[in-house]
View (spheres, rainbow, N blue to C red):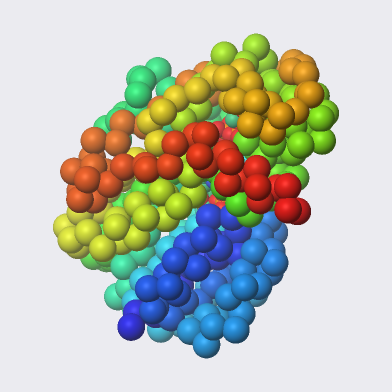
Length: 310
Ligand code: NAD
Ligand code: UDP
């Protein structure tokens, strides 16, 4: 039995990861400050004796004896990470330093939930791990993008200098049940608007693209990554390469919800990436043929069912 720490474990992705790790008979410590996560997301795990909950902020050091760490603590939606930009960058950078320090002391393997945002508004398409990105260091998304880039740097330096066992994954847009209904991300926004027959808010002309991955596929990829040989550290993309424009997404959600919503256009926020699609060749090679299994329509149906029940 392994003892596994999941920071940000009460969030959207973290709650699914905790659930899956418990189902595989691990002990799980879920650490969260509940900024964007909630106890509701993990309430169904409370009566499992192998599950522990810690209210803690990763900008402060944390002590525990653990075998593995999944470092997810960080607000992930533009609304939430821009709400307190300084706190966001502190969470990424100081959180990484504190969790890497813990990994160093305990000799745990630590996996960083990095992001496709490290590629910024990419000029290379699809994005390969070797691409260094096109990131504005002084814009409104920088607290998140540059925070995550700096965390990657820290992971590499702890690995080179202190021989810490690390894994870096770059997660592409992920959706599913337990997304925060008010975090403003496109999938949850459109579903909630469609279910209420309200206008669907497209930012800009809706031709910008994203490639959407269902959360279960991501969790499978994360666990496989953690279990790769020590010599493989990434960074590695995890995403579903099926790419859609925001207009296509809106139309699909209107159709799946039988909604009478109309599409309306709002200004495009600054630095909003025009296109995004992962190259997952490395993931397929290193994770025994891993690839996303749940395509958009199936994943949207599950997510719509979740929001209908809220
Ligand atoms: P989320 O906001 O639901 O989860 C983040 C969790 O971290 C929340 O429970 C929050 O309360 C917690 N947290 C935030 N700051 C903290 C702090 N200082 N100390 C302790 N806990 C803190 O978002 P998510 O979508 O589940 O994202 C999880 C991770 O995956 C994040 O690191 C995010 O950057 C990364 N990621 C997500 C996506 C995506 O599409 N969902 C894409 C790329 C990367
Ligand atoms: N978006 C939109 N309407 C919304 C929310 C988002 O058109 O109500 C757009 C946003 O401008 C971006 C895309 O959808 O181009 C994805 O936004 P999200 O915040 O989900 O993720 P990210 O931009 O971080 O990939």
